[in-house]
Length: 410
View 1 (cartoon, rainbow, N blue to C red):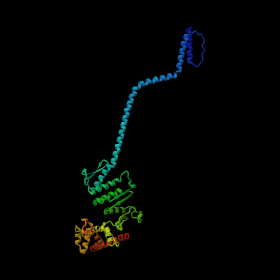
View 2 (cartoon, one colour):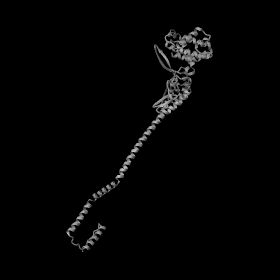
View 3 (tube, rainbow, N blue to C red):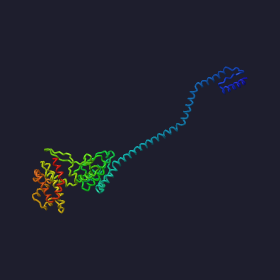
View 4 (tube, rainbow, N blue to C red):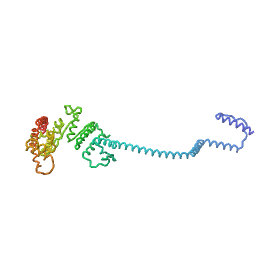
């Protein structure tokens, strides 16, 4: 009987399991079940209930055990990968540092090439053109240059060599990346005062080439040849022929020494018309000597100090043309010319005594003798007129405007 009951019970349970939400009636005989068996069944039911009540907890615990098992199986591989990653990161950091070092080195090299090596090569080319040889060279030395002569450190550079290097270096600096030449102001103060005539023309060529793009250019010089070259350059600038001086792109000025009692001062004034119109220093010297010889105002002793030197240079230029067959001292050229002997002696004494400084404190160097300047200058003009009247009259004619300008300034 118990077997039949059990079989029917199992059959119904299976039906219930298949359709748990459907009610089923259990018909049939239910045998008596011992209490201990019921208790065991209830115990199983309670255990199942507790398992259902702790289902989420058991799931989490199962997951944790599964996770631990997976981790335990992968820990060795993880540690190996972490080690590999650490080594790779270290290699990457080292490579990055090396890249930064190389980039910095490249930057420094580029800067060195731009700031030192390339300019040094270009300066050496300029020096070779300037001097006509490669004896002098600039070598890069740390943050600057060393001047070499035939491969060794140069000693005792001549004044002309120093001036050439300084001028070329300055002109090269105008190409610096930090200087905008098209908006900059360039000032050249006596750039070729100590150079020979050949170097002077080369220097002018470099100056003209390297400064044409400057927004504003000032050239100050005592050198007449350079002045003449600059003047010709500026005279051919576009718009320089305009009648309105304020619209001309180039202006010319000169410093003039003035005396106010015992006080001497210099003023900036427009260039003497004779200097602007004529290219020869000879014209300028004649103009000054002629103006001083015919000056009506009283000149101070100090104002007369420059006149002997100017007179000597004027005579040398005049006699070089009139007496080309005689070379040597000025007195030899004067000696063969038929002119008043006393006047010739006075002229020689004037130009030699005060245009040279061979001794100090000699009696014949008495400064009071400079008071005779105007009389001696008139002797010089009479001498020139006596020797070449046509030339003298032509020089006077072109000088008159300058003389009138000088008198008006006084």
